[in-house]
Image (tube, rainbow, N blue to C red):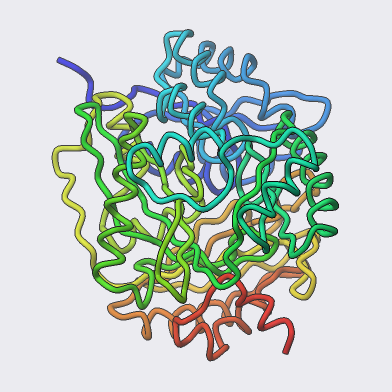
Length: 450
C-alpha cells in the first residue's frame, strides 16, 4: 500500500515559508529537516524543525542555492522528499530533475512544466495555442534595441519591456516613447543577465489602468486541474506585491468564470502537476484580460486562498507529490473574504530595505487573524535576503469587515526598533480607494502623490 505522505521532508528554504511547511508537516506527523546558513541560526524555523542542519556558502544566499549540498543533506538526514518553498530553487527545473534523479520526491511540478512556464516568451506561445488570451507583442525575444523599436512601433506605445526569465516583478520597465524604450531595453537586458543568467527580453503592450488578478490551481496526475478562486494582487510597488485579497472585489460573474477557465487551460497546456498560480492583467476599462505568467510553486499570498477555501495547500502539495492526487477529504468551498498584508523591513516612504534588530515584537491576536512570520522578538533582519518579515492575514464574512479587521490588526502590531512599512499599510487601508475596492496597479503611486 502506498504511503499517503512523505516520511520526512527537507525544506530547501528559510524564514516564514520554511515555518509554514514545517507546521503542516508537524500537524500531519511528517518529519521535517530545516537547512540554514549561520546568519539564520537564531530564526524560529531552525528551532521548529525536527532536524536542523547548517549549510555553507561564501555569501548566505549561495548556501540556499547550492542544490548539490541540499540533496546531500537530505540523504544524510533521511529525508525522502524536498519542498522548495518559493524563491531560491523553487522554479529551477535542473534542481527539480536532480532531486528526482537522486531518488527523492520533488514536491512541485515536473521539470518540463517549470522550464516551459519559466520562459515568458515560450509560455505565452504555449498557452495562446490552447486558447488563453495574451497581450499584443512578444512573438519572440528581441535580439537588439532596433528590433525593440520596430516591435513597439507595430503594437503601439506605451509598452513594457520584460525579462523572459525570472519573476516576482523583477526585470520590468515601462516606456512611453522611443527614447524611454532605448533606455529601458538596455537596463532590463542588463538586469536580466545579472538576475537570471539570461539577457532574453521582450516587449508587450502596456495597459496603464489594469488589475493584477491571479488564479490558484492544483494539477493532479489524472490530468484534472482545479481552480481555487482568484486573488487581487494590484497593490504593488516596483511591480512587486504588498497586499493581496481573495476573492477579487467587483468582478462580474462572467469575468470570474472566464479567468478560472483560462487558468485551467493554461495549466493544462503543460499537463501541470501540483500547486501553481496563473497570473493575468485585467483592463479596468474593457474588462478584457491577458495572460502574464505562471508561477510554478506555492506563492507568498497562498494564505488568503487557504482562509477563504478551508484548505491547507501545503498538505495538498505533499499529497499530490506522493500519490498524484489531492487528499480524500479535499472539498474546498469559498467562504468570506481574506486580506494579506506583507510586512517588510523597509522604510514606509520610499520602500528601501532597512535591516536591523527586533527588540519589540507584539503582534495582534484573535480568531480571525493569522500571522505567518519568519522572525520574532530578539532576532535580527540581515541585509542578505528579501526584506519581507511577516504576512499579517485576516478573514471575515464580508470584504468590509475584512478591511476593518485588517486596519485594526495593522494598527495594533508593534515592531521596533526595526523600521517597517506598517505605517504605509495603515495609510493604504485608510484610503477611500482601497476601502471601495475599486483600485488598480496605480494605487500605491496615487496614495504617495497626495
